[in-house]
Every structure is written in C-alpha cells, then in structure tokens.
Image 1 (tube, rainbow, N blue to C red):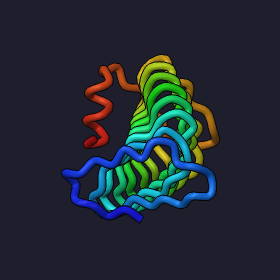
Image 2 (cartoon, rainbow, N blue to C red):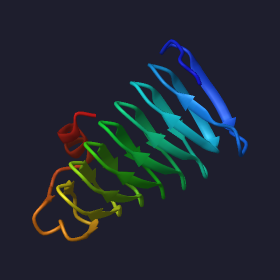
Image 3 (spheres, helix red, strand yellow):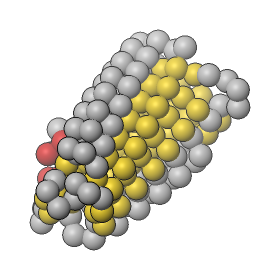
Image 4 (tube, one colour):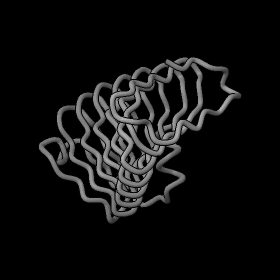
Length: 157
C-alpha cells in the first residue's frame, strides 16, 4: 500500500503477477503493466496491459491497451485503445479509439473514434465519429459540435 505526499512520483514500472499494489490518499504514480487499486484522491498513469480498479475520487489516465474499472466518483481519461468500465458516478473522458461501458449514473464525454455502450442512467456527450450503442443510448445521448476542450470542460476535468 502506498500513501505518499502528492509531490512524490512513484514509477512502479511493470508490477509482477501476484503482487497487490494499492495507491491511496494523494499519491501520484505510474505503471506499465500489472494490477493496481487506486483510491482516495490519488493520480495514476497506466499503460500497456495494466489493469486498474479506481475508487472514490481517484484520477486515472489510461493509455495503450490498459483496462480501468471506474467506481465511485473516480475520474478517468481513456486514450489510445484503453478499455473503461464506468459504474456508480464515475466520470470518463474518452478519445482516440478507447472503448467505454457506462453503467449507473456515470457521465462520459467521448470524441475521435471512441466507442461507448450506455446502460442504466449513464449519460454521454459525444462528438461526430463516436459510436454509441446500448439500451440507454436513445435517451441519454447528446451530440456536441464543439471540440475536445469543450467536452472535457463539461466534465470539469
């Protein structure tokens, strides 16, 4: 478990299988593979085949083919081919070719060629080029003509 001052940056590299790492508090770090749980108001950058479960108010920037399970009021930025599953009141900004599955009361802003599947009361604001599917899509989808910065501003990221 890592609970460090926010001015310290931990580059954890690739975390070996069987090792459990939890980042809490206001810790800041990065991983290039392995499995991590992030909670509190921590900040985490993940890449390659990393898998993260984000709780509370954790902020995760996901790159490459990383996977994030977002819960609580966590804030996720999905880039490249990242995969994000958002539940509860999670907030997601997806771009490039990331894929989001949104459930609960989660909020998603998507642009580029991202894909979003909407279920439950989840909402998405998307720019042209985003593919939105799922049973909640007709009622909970808004298309925005504005650029990325306006979408991100909508999420207060």
